[in-house]
Amino acid sequence: MPTGDLPTLFPDAMLQRITRARVVAGFAIDDISTAVPLAKALLAGGIDVIELMLRTDAGIEAVREIAQNVPEMLVGVGTVLRPDQVSAVHAAGAHFAVSPGFNPSVVTAARDLGLAFAPGVATPTDLEAAIELGCRFVKLFPAAGLGGVDYLKSMAAPYAPLGIKYFPLGGVNPDNMKSYLACDAVAAVGGSWIASAPLIAAGDWAGLTARAADAVRIASES
Image (tube, rainbow, N blue to C red):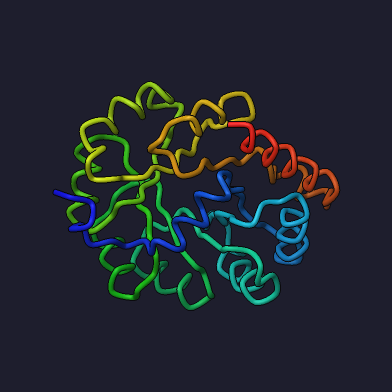
């Protein structure tokens, strides 16, 4: 099937912006008061795309705070596991959402609302089911646990004619991110080391900005 014949759940313009960013900061928020300064610190370091994970009670409100107060940030939301969460993050102002696995009901909910969505895949079977529902941008998770770059290349090869793009997350770090980004099929990588929980808890925004800048530098060299 030619790429142009695929329906898509991810607008080209948004995917291109993520591809230009090359690295996406993933994190969870425990204290809502940290959401805006955290986003601004990432921006100061050159990262303008995030994956805010819904792993705490503060998640939805943190999405709303960043979407409203840091308009320069492309706000992605991760760990979206249920259709009602799709509705909640859409209402909060998220630009896109991702999930760790492939759940057809969640993908369908995103499609019905017009929310850009990238489901998680771990196998060719997952990937084919995602493609069937119009997904051409997918999250490979957990990337390192599955076999890293070698696994990604092996799985992606048969589907290369479809133009599928991947977002590896899980075990990606400063030492291996270049190898992922060197793969033509990879749009960007996700990393939780940038906005680590200790830095957020300490309010070390300067330290966080420095980590973001270092990640951007490494990505630019790939």
